[in-house]
Length: 358
Image (cartoon, rainbow, N blue to C red; front, side, top):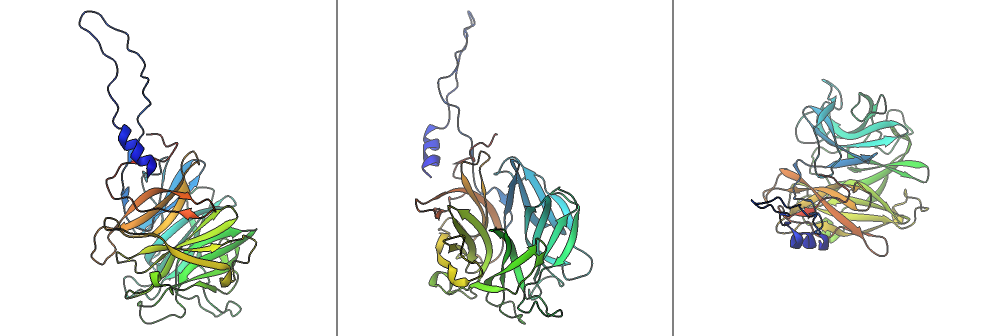
């Protein structure tokens, strides 16, 4: 915020140089610094923002237009043109309700993790998690459907079915790949069911190789109190020997939606043991002007000197999922924890990410 306030005091610049009618006068170069470029939130309509930075380019991934879309941009604050990279099939477990896709890169291939269902609309009883793999090293595909991921408790039995699961994200740590997601303890006949965070090991980017382990439930006062308590949208941050899972809690359709944090204080600890994760929060929550902040992703500025969070917020206090996407710089405390600050209201000029050219 200090950076933004200084920029506002300096802006705009004065016009430099002059001419006369009698004789042209050589213009002098300005001794004033160049004006800092600004942007304002929100940067787009939509929800569940996902960004992946590779080779100086930002790739954004979202659901819509009958499938999953990817766009690219050299500017973090401008999402670029969306390209449909995968269409839902006419039949099958993943023909409907595509939610919160994430784009990742492993071993020269691109992978998209997403949730979908076999039936359209609600009640949302059939959400499961799946993954797509690119044929070549191209985020725009084509992609091969690698199928549904196992998110249950009995992987040793061939007939065991995955449980309800959304918002799956991978965690590479110490040579092992893990999956983290939001799920139900048991499949239910109502979508008014509490959501918890689970973790399992992966043998490769498209195969879960263990039973799930419960690592977080909505139990703290700041996670509970509404019509339905949720833990969802887990995202990974790593910094100074620590691993963080930043997740969304409370109800996604209400203004009380917010972010909580799980901390693995030592990367040598086994992340599959719930006791090794320390919960704290809320670490980012709405204000009277910015409502229902949640479901984030993280990246760095073009020159890698700044850390940024993308998140969505509600457009009104009315219950529902009409949301927009925002970007904001965050910092780190002296002891290595993320400090997300306070969401900046819409329309307030913020300096563009460092190194971003206009």
